[in-house]
Image (cartoon, rainbow, N blue to C red; front, side, top):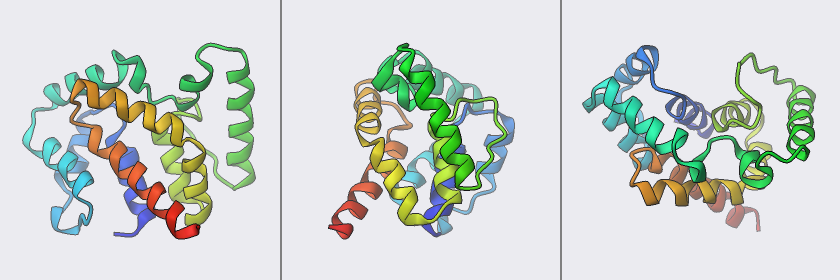
Length: 168
C-alpha cells in the first residue's frame, strides 16, 4: 500500500463512524495493510459494534477539546484570524487542483489527509509537517483518554518525522 492510499484510509477512519464506513472497513483485507498502527484501528472496527465505535469517537474527538480534529482550532481557537487562515487554506487547495466537496471546514484532519493523498508525496508531507504542533496536541489529548483512535495520529506523526529525517 503506497503512502497516498494510507493517508486516504486514515482520512476515512478519522471520520464519524457510520454504516458505510463500517462496511468499507469490513471489506479491507488486513494482509494488505503494512502499517501496525492502521491495522490496530481496522481490527478495532472489525471487532467492535458500530454504536460502541461511535461512542469512542465522540469521547475521543467531540468531548475532548485537546483532540479536536479541526487543526487550526488548536492555534487560533475562536480568534477571527482563524477565518482568514481557513480561506487561505481553501485557496491553496484550489491552486493545487483539489476541490473538496464536503460539509466540513478545510482544516478538518480527514479533509487535510484527503488533500495530502491527492497531491505529490513531498508536498503532502510538508503540509502535514506544517501542522505537526497541532497533530502532537491531538495525540497528547488522545493518549490521556486512552482513545482507540490514537494509533492513527501516531501513524501520521511517525510518517512526517520519518520523512523529515530523510529530507535533512
